Amino acid sequence: MSNDKVASISVNEDYNNDKNLYVTIGNKKPDDKDGFNVSKAGDYFYINLKGFYEQMNEDYQKIDITYNISKDTIEGEEFIIFKRRAK
Image: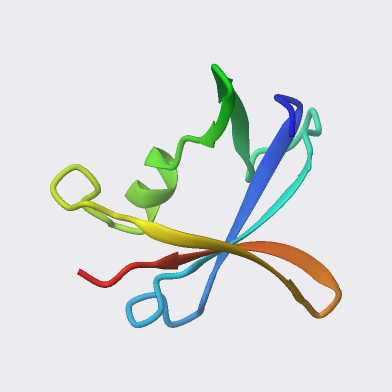
């Protein structure tokens, strides 16, 4: 992982009933406007999802949003799956 990467996030068409995130990591391109920058703080990398949550109308400041994270291959493409934890 490095700072020259970008995360692309996909969701299920029925996001209200399946709030899992399907993330791919790729190389950052100069004209990339849809991806989320991968940043580093100390030993850890992170993705700022504020814009994503605002776009999806999630009130991330009032509720805790947590995920279980795993990797899977779907139709030949590797995804990092963020499975939302139930409240």
